[in-house]
Length: 257
Image 1 (tube, rainbow, N blue to C red):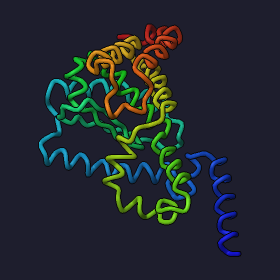
Image 2 (cartoon, helix red, strand yellow):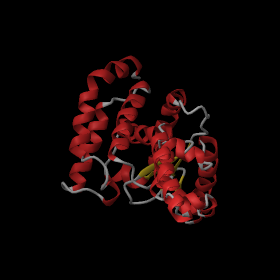
Image 3 (cartoon, one colour):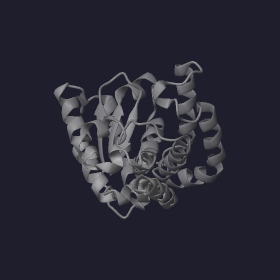
C-alpha cells in the first residue's frame, strides 16, 4: 500500500512540478536566482584561478583588450535588460585557448576564448554578437531553467533527493551546467534575438551577427561542432537574424558611434 501511494505521490508531484515551470522548480529546491548566482560566482572564481595557474588567463593581448572593450560597452545595456530582480555583478575574462567558445554563468560571469576571435577573425561588431548572445543566456536564466529541467527528469533521483549534491560538485557544475552544457534550440534562438538587440543598443551593427555564422559555416565546412550539436543550424540562425534586421537596424542607426 505504501509503495502504491509513493508512486501516486511522485506521479502527482511530477505533474505539479511540470506545471510550475523549470525556473520555479529550481526555486523550490533552493536554487533561487540569488543563490544560483552566488554559487556560480564561487565556481567562476575557481575556473579563473585554474586558468591563471595554467597561464591561460589573457589580460593583455590585443584580442583580450578588444573583448574587454566590447564587453564594457555592452554591459550597461545588459544591466538595463536584467528582469530577474537580482542585480548581476558582470565580469569578463579572456582565456587563451584554440577552442572556439564563449560562455556566461548565472549572474553574468563570462569568458571568451581567444580561439573564437582569432580563428574567425572577428571584428568588434562580431565580438559584440557573440558576447551579446552569451549575456542573453544569463539574463534569461537559461542555466536555471536547465537545472529545473534536470530536477524534473531526475525526480526521485539524486538531484531531488539531495540538493547538497549540487553544492558538492560546484566546480563540475560550473564547467558543465552553468557554462558549457548545451542549451535547447529554443533557448539558443532566444539568445540570438536578445544578443542582436543588445548589440544594436550599444551601437554595434546587428548585421555582424549574420557574418559570425557565415564565418562559422566556412570553418565547419557544413558540419556542426560537437558543442553546437543541439543548437539550431547555422543557416537557420542566419535566416532568423535577417528577419530581425528591419526591427533592430533603426536602433543601431540611432546609437552607432
